[in-house]
Length: 335
Image 1 (cartoon, rainbow, N blue to C red):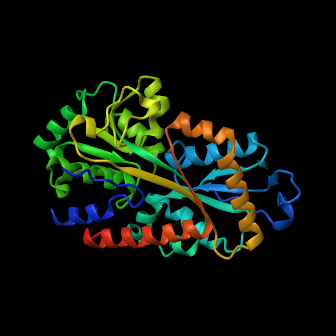
Image 2: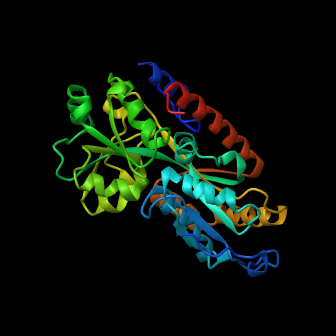
C-alpha cells in the first residue's frame, strides 16, 4: 500500500476525501537598529497568536533566544496575543500596516483558522518573511491512561468513536484537527464520528490532556517534551517517517502498522506594507539565526526538521497553502 505522505501541503488532497466519508507600544523606526553596521538588530517584536506553552510559543521564544545568544539581535520581545485560533493576532498584524519591527509566529493552524473563524484578515495580506521548520505530530495520553500502545487506543476508538474525545491545539482546518481526522480515516473510522475538541494552542491543550478532559491529544510532539521527560505524559506514536531522536523509544504510526505520515510547519510573517529595508532586516536576521550553531542545536534537541525558505519563495508556499486549506474546508462545510 502506498504511504500517505503529508509533507508541506499536509496531504490536503487526502483531507478532502474526509469530507466525503497583549498589545504593547509599537516600536518606531528610530527605536530599532538595522544591523547594517554589523551590530545586533534591536527593537524587534515577535507576536505569538496563541497561549504560552504551545508550539508557536516554543518556536518563537527559541528563535528569539538564539538570535540573542548568537548576537544577531538584542532585546527581542516575544509576547502572546491569543484568541480565535490565532486570528486575533493575525488581525493585529494586518492592522499594523507598515510596522517593520513587528512580526508574527504562525503556521498551518492560522491558515485554517482564518477561514473557520471568518476572519476579515488573511495571511495573504501579510508580508512573508521565513518558513522555519517542519515538525512531526504525536499522539499523547496522560501517564495513567489505560491505553499503553497506539493500537490499544485505536481499538477502543474504533469501538466507540464518539465516546473517545481527542483534543487538538488548533481550530478546524489546522494541523491538530487534520491529524486525528486523517488518522481516523486511515484506521477505518468515519471522520464525521470523531469527537474533536479544539483548544487555542498547545498551552491550553496540555492541561486538558493532563486533566483527563480528553482521552488523547494530537499535536506537535515538541509541545510535550518537558512533560514526557517529567513522566506526566506518554507518547503512543509519532507521525514522522522515521523515529524521532528526541523520543527514541516511541514508535512511528507506520511501524505500528498504521500507514500514515504527517508533518506540520511553522513560519514568520510581518504586517503588510513594510519597507524593503525592514523586510531585509528581518530576513537577514532570520537567515543568520538559521545558519547559527545554536539554531542547529535546537533543531536536534527538539526534533524539528529544517525547512528554511524566505521572502517570495515562502510567499508562494503560503499562497498555495491558503488555497489548499480553503478548498478542503469548503469540502468539509467549514468555510
